[in-house]
Image: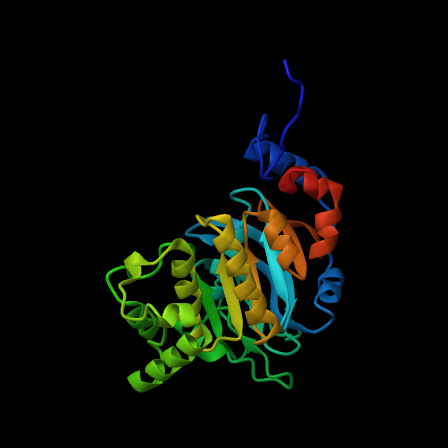
Length: 311
């Protein structure tokens, strides 16, 4: 019998033995480090633009996140990795308003995380919800998703299959501008998207259901751009895509970060691809941050590699 071990964890390639999610969680918890706010601030170059402070959140009465802290600088990218159920998507949901906030604070803007007001367990802010302070921060904890998009420039790019298949490409993009003051503004923003992505422009009158997987993902990303957001929350950008389309999607995200100045917070099950892309990475385990570091450092970490990179 061949004694070759094969892939262990979430890597790619042939698999002879794959450890369970429970075992990944147990091993990840065993290598967890004590993560301080100072470390997170340093990873964000001391200039946090998106900040989460002591966030407890979940769904209904179920708490998924336990006193989570997060820091991301403007024009920086963060990739969240970890086993299923670790709370990665719940962080995105909390930022955008899809989860229930039990306590803690989420702020957007220069010097985010520096506001001194507190929040009680019901999620009600005792101070000004608009973050009226010298650094021009915005406390978005209790805002609705629509308010977060219109007031704070936060856009959520959902997992696959969020387009309207019976609508044309053009109509899908118009839907992305539903918060614009006038329909003409949404149409103008749509034309800017078509100028940027000729591949979509060539299919503007085609129903979205006839697009390839990569084109559908491009449409989902582009629809979020119609409102010209500052922060992109990207949930599993590679899910269900062939390798050639995965590369295309990450090239698009790279352009949005480095050429258009977007701040990106991403959940990516393909940990290797996500960490190769991102400036910084967090490893989540059971609703807590187990490890945080630069993307390249996590890629080179043998403990992370064994569990999540197939190393």
